[in-house]
Image (cartoon, rainbow, N blue to C red; front, side, top):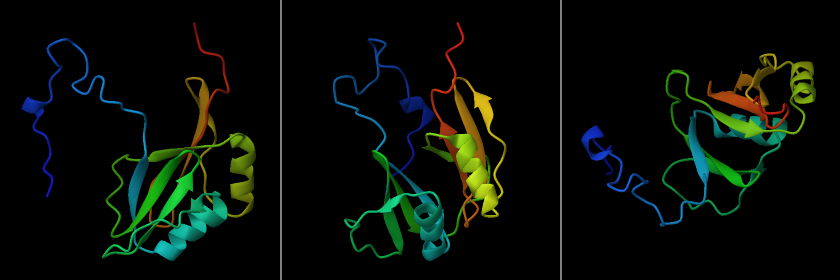
Length: 144
């Protein structure tokens, strides 16, 4: 079983760079979220938001699914969702106002798109109560 790193062990390396400098961090591979009903979650993430089911999920001892979300993945884990304490993940879209309108037309509750830096963002909950940010990057020029 993995344990959390103590805050004492999390310190800048002596040269001021990250401890893993030169070891090839290439980006975010996946996020995993707990869902109490995998079929309902698949209906939402695949049928509504357009993610694709990956066929390469191993046969674990628990239910779930692996989904493609552009160049990254969302892993659904069949388990109780944690309480909402502000945690969320973001999916990027090309036209957020149009997406929000389409979702609302289908009866989904979605927050109004608001500016966040150079982007637009809205929020909604999946069927398990996980908060999902709907994000449109690069809408506005960077403030100088």
